[in-house]
Structure formats: C-alpha cells, structure tokens
Amino acid sequence: MKLTRRGSIGVLGASLAGLALRPAFADGTVVDVELWDMGENAMDMAGDMPMKMHMPGSDMPMAPMGVKLSRAEVPAGEVTFKVTNSSKDFVHEMVVSPLAGPSEPPPYNADMDEVDEDKAGNLGEVEDLDPGQSGQLTITLKPGSYILYCNIPGHYTHGMWAELTVTG
Image (cartoon, rainbow, N blue to C red; front, top):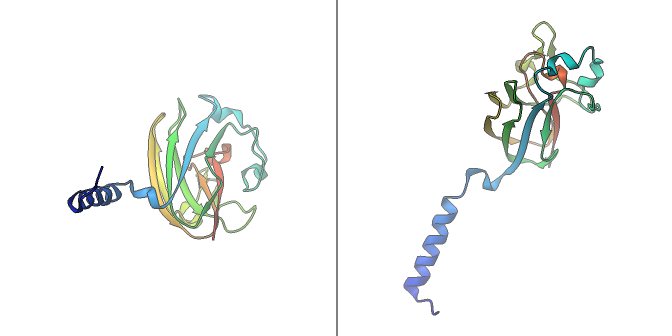
C-alpha cells in the first residue's frame, strides 16, 4: 500500500486525535486502592489493639480492616488513586495526608475517634464510598512519605491505613 500526502495527513490527524482523547491520568501514575474489612463484625474484632499498631511502619497482620495499595512507592508528580470499597457492610473513604516523619502517626482526635484532618494536612479524598462503590482522586505529590487512611470514626484505629512513598 502506498501512502499519498493526503493519506499521510489523514493518518497523522487520526493519531493526534487519539492522543487528545487519551485518559487524563495517562501522563501520571495510577495506584489501585482497595478499602477492605472482615465483614459486619469487623468493628468488634480489634478489641484493645496496642497504639503502636496505628503507627506508620508497624505490622498489621491482625487488623480487621485495611487499605491495600497496588504499589507502595511512586515517582513524584501526578498520581491517580482508583479507589474501590470491597466491603459488603461498611461505608469507607480514602484520605491522603503527608507524614511528619517515619513511624510518626498522624494527629489523632481520640474524642472523635478519627484523624484530625486539618492538622494532618488533608491533600484530597474520596469520600463516603458505599459497599462495592468506586471513586477516583488525582493529585500532584512531591517526594516524601504519605499516609492513605479511612477516617470514618474508628476505622483508622482498626487498621484502615497504608503508607505511600513518593520518590524524587
């Protein structure tokens, strides 16, 4: 098949149109986020977990709720979080905040049983996802350590958080 000038322009035009129609997150990094729990009794399962379990860097094998990331490290820049609530029983959300330092938990309001988002530095969130529902958040992140957590009262202390490292 021989391409003519007119044919070449048509192919070029179609290619450029295809580039213009690509998804907005194509230039950035995508992180799939699963918000999970162990079912309707998950809030009763944790009992009196030691506070160190709620600190970044701690091991959470017994947590009845959690945040699972498809990747724990991403390059600096635009990051799209594709969030799915895989629970059958609970509404969940995902909040992104910077971490002040290694093994330092975000500021916690024990009276409200949630992270103090204003003090923690809420960078964005996907709010109130019903069971089975999905949502998306795209933000630009600088190098550093971040925490993704569910801030429905009691969920953070039941293990609903994960660390994310952003590299330069």
